[in-house]
Length: 382
Image 1 (cartoon, helix red, strand yellow):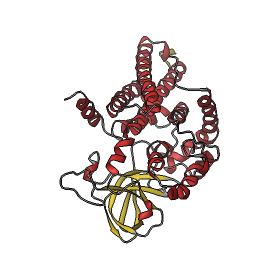
Image 2 (image 1 turned 45 degrees about the vertical axis):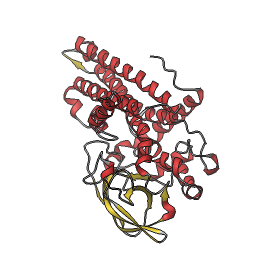
Image 3 (image 1 turned 90 degrees about the vertical axis):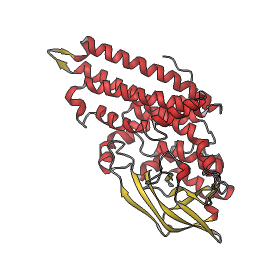
Image 4 (image 1 turned 180 degrees about the vertical axis):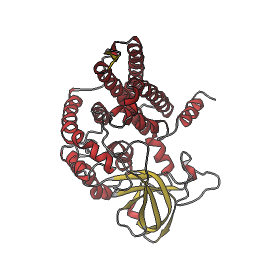
């Protein structure tokens, strides 16, 4: 169906992204999967082309165009080529907003040029071994000591944690017995700080090109100058960006589901069974027709949500609806497409298998499907 979301500038950016991905990502992707990450040099190449700094002000080397639709284009083009861009999505759509909204002028001078040119990689450390969706339960502590904070704690499931130069750590700086949400603070821990170490690199069933790490903080001395925003106000900051974070997952889900259909069409047109192309069977046609209809429905919902987000009007409950619908749709569509590959769909040499394993986490991170339902139910007064 015709989409009205993008301008000529977005489409020009799309051509840039498509060319880069086809030439610099696709040929090397199998090696990156085996190595567990995208090389740092590729981030720098993307930075040189301006793909990482669209939202960063021009005075720091960015384009000064904080338009979320550029991020959408980047995700769509990666999915179209049946690849992902490692931790780029997390850096641009989940982490960069914290720097853009809460970094002071001195912090901007220190960090923004590196964020724009791809020489500074980032991660955000929220989740702990015993704390997932319940962010108010964070047990990592940061105690003020002169001009520093002494940080102690453990974080897990940290996307990009192994490569990150800057890690935004959520820590408790005070306790309010009447309000568990008060007293959380964002501190930027820098690579090389004494007491900051990276533990295991976790082995995942999917998303092989982005590392996921355990982090340890033992008496890490973090300068007060590295606090993002105001002390004790992190819970509100985290909630402010959740709508975009959930929208980001939905964008990937729809784009990857669309790519699964394209891959299934290509395979079934070329694969023969009983002497005839698999695509000629009525079951194949009906399955792909149903999948296509689901994707178009999700795309319409998603595009409306993106437009609302660009206007600053996307509510938390609507972001939850979009994430719930799009990620559940992705699971159904990718599974049905894989079935059309038969036994070959189970082999990792075929991209459909990677789409299948990568898709599973979409219903978990940025808030599980169950958490999305709780949020939606509350908006209904239930």
